[in-house]
Length: 474
Image 1 (cartoon, rainbow, N blue to C red):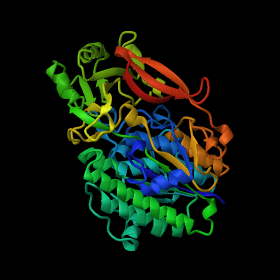
Image 2: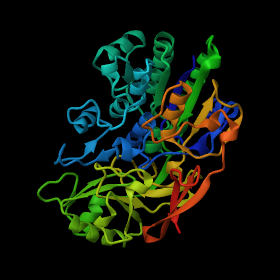
Image 3: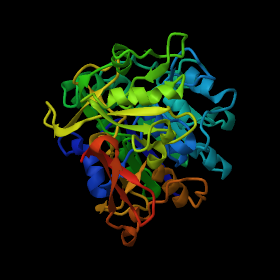
Image 4: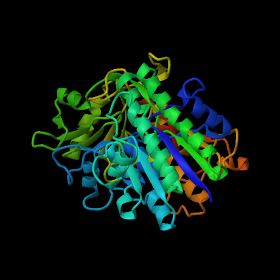
């Protein structure tokens, strides 16, 4: 009976995988199947990517459209921060989850199969990765958990969770122990997911090739090696497939600003909640969302942004909010949803090397990330490129798949290999991972964007889904 262990290294750029920096991951990629054209979703943020991974649907389908967003019904006076469990539950408005598509855990449980989650990320992200854990009686543990039976069990068996740090070495190692000492040997789930918060944390706060980032990457790679060793020691090792992934990449942040402050300087009443003295709510991000009290104000804001060198093209839930040709529909990217912002701003990044010698830097709006820190969420090529490796079990050995893939294709692949249906998933089983004849060179496509920008994209087949690769100036 096949089973799978998924390991996510939050924020890892594929061009940072090497025998020197990540020996275990590099060896796994060489021995298995590597996807050369794997991509994130838009916005390329963790709490948008995690539901996309776990539901097999893009944001327009599952409904989680940003890490930070505004909902006038749920919280009219403030922004919702989805890293917080309480804000995720507030968005659910009394339901089990704010997600509008079933999760992998739910699909497996419906077929009598099991799923377990071990997370070194935020509590909100863990809730989105396994929203039905309590109802299903299955395992969900996160490093931020302090209450409940699962947290007590982990403390008793593994010990207390180490404090948060940059890099988050103690918590990475602790999460690895929870997986290897409890979940895999005692629960033996059909599918287990281990979410590692490095290198993302160190990238954000210390820079992409800082000593902290290198230490965080080594720590996560060490856990990958431990899982590989565990798998190889099992009597059914030949049936256990490993899937290594990242949820997004990173670009160096250069030109930090506050979009709300810039709008206020231009005379607009901007803030973080729809107070009496606020006309436009702004959610800070690499692709900030804007919600208007009166849609008639949107063209004036767009006119101001068009004069700013740091501003890229605008995206819209409904492009009719602006004159024709001034905004691209979020639905083109699979990201349009009723929760989406009226407008989503992008930043005009560059493909030139950053101070670390890595290609790519971009302006950003993130109060807690320093100038020069890693950033993600936008349409920069370095933000959208992801790691995806499948090794062992049914997967090909020493193969490189050229066909496009994104996070939504992973759950359908696992379901298919377990003999289960994928109806309702937008993603597709990636047959090229085990059948070379199913691989194909992507079909390139250029999508015109406002203000002289273009989106490089690809499709797997004529008329198929669009896989964005990166935005650039024409």
